[in-house]
Image (cartoon, rainbow, N blue to C red):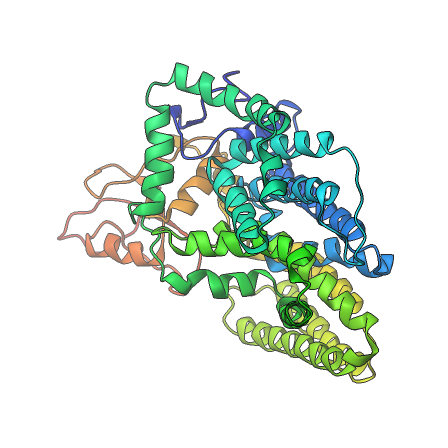
Length: 507
């Protein structure tokens, strides 16, 4: 888009590509037009979207839990920002975080609409005020979500609201979301690009709507089948290290049930936005971990507010201690996992890498011991401590671990090494995973063709250790390579007569 000036039709290798809508591509292309470095242009949209989602749930915490101390309600955005799901997808060059952020903003707008109508805050107070702006924002944010990832946004938002209405019977309040202001703002944001893209590309609606939405959901055509329960452990992992806070959240829900005040609880409304994505995508025949990312923000909000309730209640000291013990156990498990992983590092020696991993292990052990000590004494500051340690771990990983693993997990290092190769037209890939193909294409700035064993000319082939065995079996390569290499290999190919003795002549 940035090079061609065509901001309507997404393209992959020059051909129309309708797997996802256009919003992420627009934002990344703007970054390239502003001459940002490639990494910034590709990843900055997701980072800004994660920030917007964090601010949205922080605002919700302050508005709907006004009785809680400000320092506690401020935990909601911080907990979200330090979950595994947010840390990962806030740095990913994908539309997933944009999609999740605009759904979180739509949830915040919807909660404001209902609060204007009848949804009380946690202290039982409600306010009557004009809801025109929240309705416009609800429609606009939902429109942006549709531009980010398609009609799934309507299904997730509508499903969450439908569950809440069925449970609470607040039919009149829910009807507000069909207000002309909400519909108009949605249409103004979402429809123009879809209409223009369909006019320019007659196959767009068929490919995008039928193939990449309905077929993806109803059939395993895209080869991502998983069991029905797949998203349960994925959701628990995405919430780490705060998964244990689901226990106080469940206790809070049981308390509201016993007091028969759950129908007007803001927590119930946010829980609907967390549960429905997991439930809906569990029925999908194509499952990827990113599908439940929209559930992480409302779950982080619920967990933060439930923990705030535990802190505020003198009768919940036992829960506080057990919660701290569980978080300490998570820290200890993380440290042990890092030690095990240290002994399975790729077969290359990087003292700096190993030192960084040991720093991460030390942080995890400190986290375990400190959390256990604070929890034993009933001090809730173990959550703040864990937030700081998670932040420190991200810094250690970003500066001390990942750069050394670049050759094994990213196409960036390989592209930089081969950028000035004397024969760029003879660089190929062979049976690489799709993620490697796309990553190499991004950093090379072009698609690398697939090598064929029938190609008689010398070539430089990027392949995997498993595919390397196929090349050797075809007698297209003779030489020594590191057998334990975990990333991709450079395989210099020189065809040789079968009768010749091994005498490699690399290209």
